Length: 193
Image (cartoon, rainbow, N blue to C red; front, top):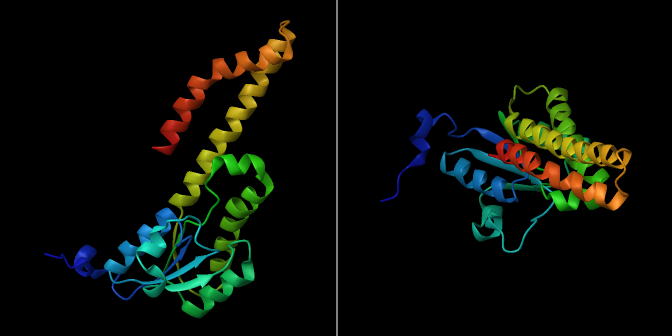
């Protein structure tokens, strides 16, 4: 027996236009499925499908949502989509979430994650639409960024202290990581959960 989700939440999302950045990613594609089930008209905004296989393709979401391909770093593109579709709700999930990739391409990661968030907020501000924003995703990124940056700073700080106390550079770094790994693990785990 299939449950009709359109009546969930008192039908509050029935017919509501929702802009969802990052709709082709893991979380974004699942949120697209859920929003569709709730009767929302989903307008997705994403660069491309990031994985193979992908829930976006397996769920045939390209046929169920307005699938707009664009980059959150493109303010004019975001603004055009908002002006054209006039969403009442915006969920901003577009990001570069892979931490290892952020080490290799830190500038591009910050451009997408921080600059993209600023562009989404600015595009909403520049339009006449009254839009409800999901800032939880953005706050989660800010908290996780703080954990990552603080961890690196603390490791470097401890390594420098170890060198000042007479350790060789390599041993100082190894000991610094060894002494900081548990607090890093704990703070990262509690931030992600």
